[in-house]
Length: 174
Image (cartoon, rainbow, N blue to C red):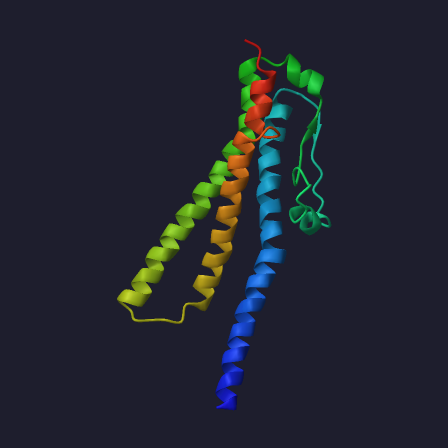
């Protein structure tokens, strides 16, 4: 009886450790990866219009910044605002929307992958009667958490005053 309890307790401890590690270590870096590509989208268009820009990736501050509620953004492209304001409204739109398009690409790819993996999981359980799915479920969990975080970040980027769409509308000249 004691041996069974120890085995079950160890299983629970491993799952708990996995959840803690993925939430507090892996997820912030996954978000940093998508933030990097978001900002690269802005940079690409800014460079296309020959506007000086820079983005510095800080991997050491990723975790503290991710869990700091006062941190406005995990990464911001710095650029010459005067040159940006000289662009036409369609060019400014292209600059601001480039990051959101990058976010949508990540959302689509993660969602598509999760759909395929879950179809495969259903096949394994329903038809093959294979139930050892630890690794598939682990990857599913990590990608699902990333997907949820990206949805929240993308909605915030579209709707909040510090987001790309607000910044775009704020500088539009009719």
